[in-house]
Image (cartoon, rainbow, N blue to C red; front, side, top):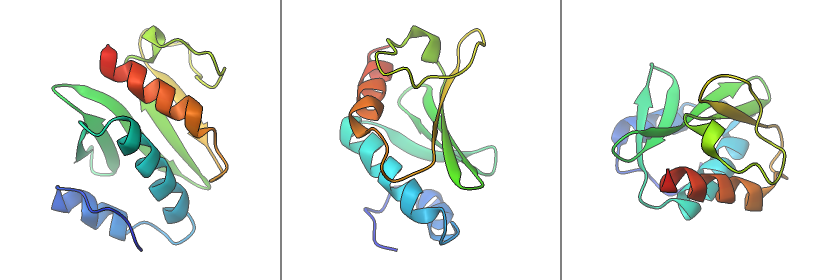
Length: 117
């Protein structure tokens, strides 16, 4: 796979071990997130989730069968102009992405907002 390596070798190992079916979608989403939030640090938490953070965790990725779920830890505070945020918990909101033809503008807007929170 061709991608911009993380500064974290554990993240690179995680990416290298993604299935061929989900890797292209994962890498498109990762590139979109990092373009909007280059200040993010990447880490693997809970053994199988890539987490984007600064001094706190902001976004958690969960790889599912044919989809990537992005959990915005403080998603309730985001302006959901695109109607893509799901959930009714106290803080977190989720975006589910199933295709490389996803709304990049929306994702980057959510990423920028979460960095301002």
